[in-house]
Image (cartoon, rainbow, N blue to C red):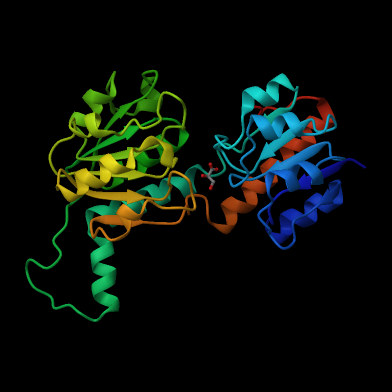
Length: 317
Ligand code: DGY
C-alpha cells in the first residue's frame, strides 16, 4: 500500500476515503506543520496532499525525499507551491479546478454586496443597537445599472458574471485572451487593465496570482478607476498593494473594498481593520460542506489517477 502525507485535517468522509486507499499520515489535530516537520513526515511517502497554508517553496521542494512523486494541492490556486522547482525534481503538482467555482463566485457576490451596501457599518450599528431608521441612513450603492469589471474571466470570473447579470449589472472584463462569444455572453472585452478599470464602477478580482498580476492594483492603477469605485478580491491577496489601497480608501477615491484574501494570510494589514468602508472575510471562498468535500475528493482523485496511470489531468506543472 502506498504511503501519503496529508498536511491538514480534512472533513471526516474525505479522511475515511483516504484511509481506504492508502497508508496515510493524517493530521488529526490540524497542527500547522513547520517546513521541517513536513519534510520529515513525508520522508517515506510517495504523495503529499497539501493545503494553501503550506509554503512549499524551492527550499522545501529540494529537501523532499526522492520518494515523493506528487503534491496534490487541496485548492484551485497553487501559488503556495514552487511548481518549477517541483518539475525540476520530477514531482507532479495538481490542483482542484471547477469544484469550487460556484462557492467562490457566491463569496465574490457577498463581497460586492457587503462593500456596496455598507455592511460593515450596518452590522456594527445593529449589534450595538445604535441606530434609527431615516431616509438617508447608511445609504449605499445600488448594483443594478452599474458596470462590473471582472479581472480574470476564467471559470470563477464567468460564474461571477452570470450572477452579476441577474443583479442587472453590465459586464466588462479583461483576460489574457478575448473569450469566444459563447463564453463571453455579451460581456465587453478590454484589451488592457487601464481600459477595464476606467469603466469599473465595481471591480471583481478573479485572476490567478502570477508575476504579472502581483500588485496590479497599485498607486498608479488606482487612478484609472472612476471616482467612488468599489473593488473586491476573492482570488489572492498578492494582487493589491495594500498601502496604496488604504490611502485611496481614506482619501475616498475608492468608495469601498471587499476582501476575502490577504497578502501574508492569516495576517491582515492593520490599516484595513478600522476603516468602515472595508468589508472583510477570512478566506471563506470555498468554505461550504459540499465544496470542501468535493475539493478533497478531487485532490484524492488526482493522487489516485497519478498512482494508477503515471499521469493526471489536473497537473499544473
Ligand atoms: C483555492 O482553492 O484556491 C481557495 O482559495 C481555497 O480556499
